[in-house]
Length: 88
Image (tube, rainbow, N blue to C red; front, side, top):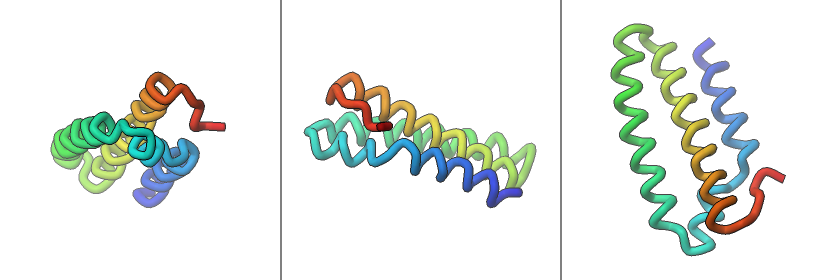
């Protein structure tokens, strides 16, 4: 069940494409770095809370939620700054 939760996050990660790489290659590495740092901090905080209540399942859920959210944020920024749709 833990592996399935993490697999869902990785499937979304795969589906969003290389949005982080696109940001770096088009000169928006600082924006990409800021997004990554913010979501890394949120990941730690969410993990602390969910591990306390749900243990390993909580860690899997927290990591998956943050992975999906960071990819969605990067997609939004790629569409806005680079003006391309990375999903197609």
